[in-house]
Length: 80
Image (tube, helix red, strand yellow):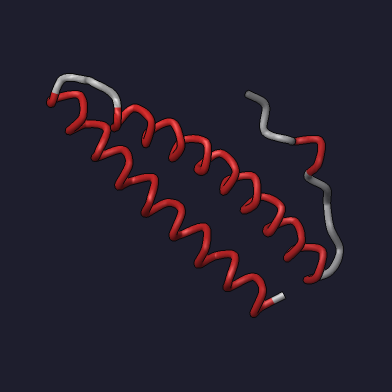
């Protein structure tokens, strides 16, 4: 999986910085959504309880990371 390094550019103004940050946040959000979807499928499958316990921990961490991305995105909309 390659993170679009070619899309990242050196920017001049605060508006460009905000756009770059928002682009990075969109990429993070996309990957977090993929992780979320796969975790939900795994949690519904017939797995041993000790595995599901670990998956729930990962799921909670993904939810927290998604909230951080949403908060940063909100901050960027207000700031830039």
